[in-house]
Amino acid sequence: MLLVHALITVDLPYIHSLKGRRKVLASIKDRLKGKNMAVADLSGEYAKEAVLAVAFFALGHNDANNKIASLRRFLEESLPEASLTIDYEIL
Image (tube, rainbow, N blue to C red; front, side, top):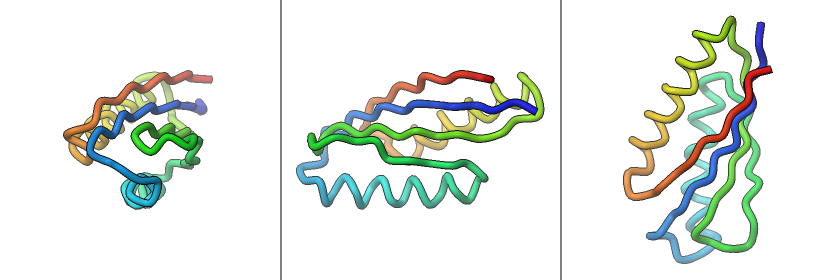
C-alpha cells in the first residue's frame, strides 16, 4: 500500500473575496472527502489563490497514477475557469 501526497495550487481569477474562495473550496473539500481523500486548505490571505493538500492511499503505482488522473479531471470539471497545478509524491 502506498501513500500519495498532493499539493494543488489553484488560480481563481473570478473570485474577489476570501468568503467566495472559502465557499468554492468547501464544496471541493467535501466532495474529495467523499472519495476517501484527506484534504487541508493551506491558502494564504490572497483571495485569488488557493492551495490544497490532499493525501490518500493507493494499492500500487498504477492505482496511484489513476487516482491522480481522476483528481485532475475532477478539479478541471469543477473549476473550469481556474488554472491549476498538481505536484504529488508517491511514498
